[in-house]
Figure (cartoon, rainbow, N blue to C red):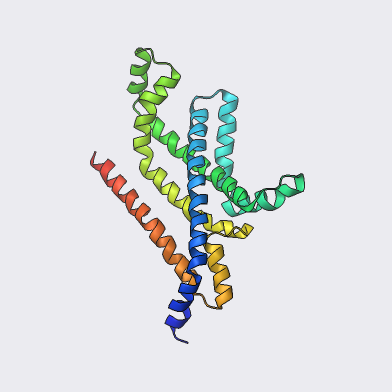
Length: 221
């Protein structure tokens, strides 16, 4: 067999396409939910680390440091396979979402923190001079400026979350990679894996280019 029949077998790809599209939909749902929850959690962690009481700051710092250090695959296995021993049983989708959200929020927290700290101190002083309380200060003055600063790194982090969804296959979740692996086994041909790789590229390449556009635009400003 030549390389095209082995790795680029069109009939095999056509047969596997329904499975790949089904897995793609699950990957998109998992990625989108994890990104949204990770951004919310990251923002809350950043605010707790910057402005919370001392013990809250300590908890936030410990959370961020620990879950940035733990490999996602290890965390995913612990959540899905170890928690049942203490009576907590989660579906593969829930376990994957939880693991991705925890790690994503830890990284997003540092991104948001750097963005907030990049806002000039004069903005804080001017807002306080106008009598704005903490919530109006953050909502109307600080966060709108910080979010503009962190858009490029946040987009990069979101891309990493989408790529990391492939690890969910280790907990038997039928995502794109898992479906491609099953299709490969059924066809005894690696073409479905090549097809999954192409789908990942088509899904992520526009986001990669979007990061470059954001970085260029903010650099010009």
